[in-house]
Image (cartoon, rainbow, N blue to C red; front, side, top):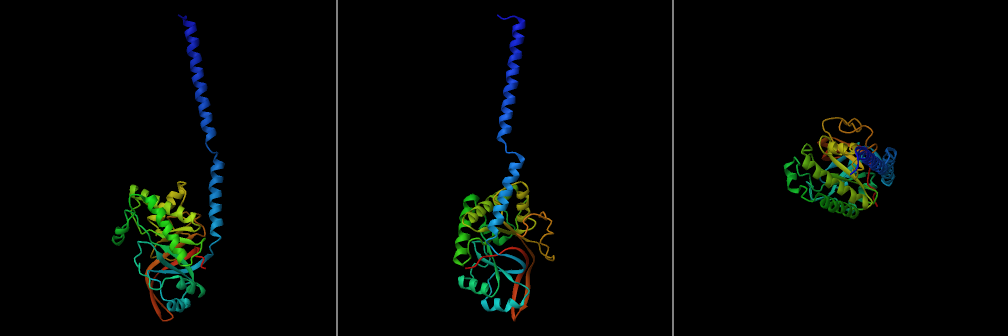
Length: 293
């Protein structure tokens, strides 16, 4: 049996070994973490890749209208006398309010583009589980949002190609206003959107996103601030009863999505140009538009 001095020495040595082991483990953990500069570089590289991809799509600044049913070629020709130079078309998706499009086909897209119109393709797919609109509750995102988002992203690209909308073009996913304060619903919605974005990007297109400024757009901005990846390349936000205010929107930081924004500032507005009366939504654009071929 060891004496008191020997036992004290042994305990001291054990404490020293434990301290050294803990210190070594801490050093290994710190070494495994990326340096702040490395994290910044990673995000900077991702942003540069997105900007490079956006160069494939022609930029557009100016007024645009979107409309549930694509107008006739004659109406589009007459509306060249309007202030608008771009048109938003609801080209695909199971959630479209106007699923039967008598005019919208590859020939129509080619014709209006030759007239000088720019095209903003809108895909209205599955909607948030907590969507407010009663007429959208029948097309809500299901229990497998990632799988569903990936599938619908593929559908969006396939339908765009059938209309002659080339790779590099933005495709805008339309999600109507929903209860972003419902955490479970918001998480499911974001999972769907991110999966849709990944699939659209993987197939060579730019994923855009349309929603109300107070719900979907606010959630995308919160996700951006949290460092979430696979977010939309372009944002189309709805805030009605204002003038055009692309970079004054309170839900978005003024430096976020630069030259990748559309503001829908009025809806259901009746206008007549060249003898044709249409009921449209009004938009101001600083964002890429479709490549047509």
